[in-house]
Image (cartoon, rainbow, N blue to C red; front, side, top):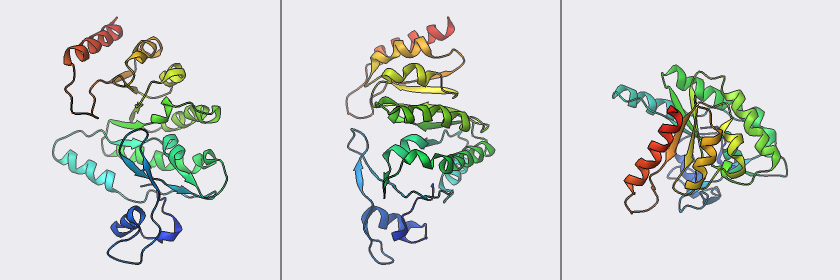
Length: 239
């Protein structure tokens, strides 16, 4: 969606290109070296690793997200699109030479801005932006970049739910709660102990989304415990 297709795959952006990037070959055209595939954090899911060059350019390269949003709206639903955040996306990408990936932010953020504005024009109220690297130990430059990024993205007329998961915010708790977004999602399955710290720092006017259902196993959830947590948070915001 961001137009990051390595030059070895050519300039096309179609289904055959997707297959060549993922598997190295497609029904049409010659084979190429596929993109690296690696685990998505500590899960058993995998993702294709973007390859970035110092002069990397970005573009809004397809309309799939907007088309599917329109289809859902036509069926009477109000979708909440989910995007991988720009900083997590950059963090997980690899470079073709030695340079600072943060140097690409000024080129990347306008594309995210385009996406958010276009969704807003389609009548979307909320968009979820996933930034799971907020649960990692980050160099100061990356931590500082969060404030820059979300101050710029807040100019779009749409509500942002910043989502974190896989662990606790830890030392980033106060910082994350103060980012200029409309809401924050936290993982209370993997890190239930972080709730107190988040409640101590988040403003009452923000939405707090609670990750209470474990989607990574077959076991039933303790709904009474989940309801108790929900009521605790509700009382905090009402009080």
